[in-house]
Length: 306
Length: 306
Image (tube, rainbow over all chains, first blue to last red; front, top):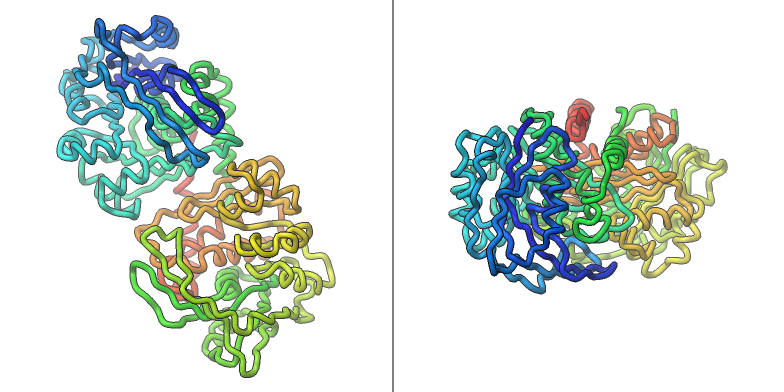
């Protein structure tokens, strides 16, 4: 059984989309990634994060029910959990941040539990590059695969730290605008080439409703997104992708290009559920049969007979 | 041998992109579509259009060299050829029109040559819907497939005429913003459903660098665009797509969903050449071997083994 170590946030989100709004609900990159990875059998998933005393037991219960080890989630006495509030407009690719309260996240020193220091896969969720690095430094053995997610914010304020961590990373997952910012190239093909030189041998560029591109060793793979009637709430889609991607690879323990292509499809598959309801509601209830049926849809979507 | 009848513009373009600029060069939707369709053997292609006396013989020579019948291109004595000038910015999806001189196009009454009045496929290029309809009305036999391309401009000024023609159409090819405008729906899945009800049983939504979606009878197919190092000049990419799409179908004489899926791939394949150089330069020189090699790239791009 492969171990998957996820470093990410566990948080409260308040969301507003054209379809409605929510009060504070469970969110955070680590939460989405963990729940997504829990769709794969024979994977031992550990989550490293930090929450405040206000974080309710029922959310821990959900994670435990999905066999996610929460030993690495520090609970800060008297502290408040990271809170983010955002609003999406008709074009779901753009969002406004209404509130960001870092709270306990401001002093997050990730502590990797002993049991996960030899994890086969490390998923470094979107956090300060130095926090990502601090987690990676605790590994006893070199992981078979290190995956890093990041965003434009860290490129703005901590680009040197980010470049330092990227040297230790096998896979980077970013969106198209972030790839352009990181590389200074408008063309995604050129951007991927430059990002390869920064460290990652696999570059995954997420394009939301337009799918994802995987670059590796001069080769390209294009994965579609499933065309949906409605995108109800896009929050966490990228983190869900990361969970499907790493969960599949941990289960297969195969890091070839062919296997990584499949992982991109699996990440896209599970992410397509997340956006169907608010927050983690859909991803927390999705069944094995549902994800298998939808996998067939992904095959039909791209299959042609030339 | 199937006949393919193309109604479209034959024009002069002056283009400016981040890579350079051109004087007046050969352009027009009919030109790109015809040159693209000429990649398919056993297709008899006739082009219906209008030009002025200023249209040089060398451009006719190019069309003839590609076995495109130009009997249906009216040459107006003393008239001037349609001229369009445009400028692209770094984001090649957006362009500014600098000059539009309709010239002879203002009084275009398409006359379909006798020989093409029983064509298997009619490709109605982007023109006023009443001009598209006037051509269609001249057909003696019901074509096996009528394909229509249009744009937001006609939705703005001639929506009723457009809806009238759409009732007679089997396939519509439009871009994502146009599909949204035509249907009033943001979701492309919902937009395609509404557009089906207007007539076309196949709805092709072109998304530029993000590929194309094909909707038919509750099914969806997602075709990738080839990720390119540089898009040199996107002019004519959509018209080239239409030529590859209809040229393939005319050659196959098979209008099933499986065949139309392949046609979308072929359209995308040939369009990927057009954007590599200014104007029709690349599409006029591309070889059979080059398009076949690139077809393999399209297969690799989407192939996975789950």
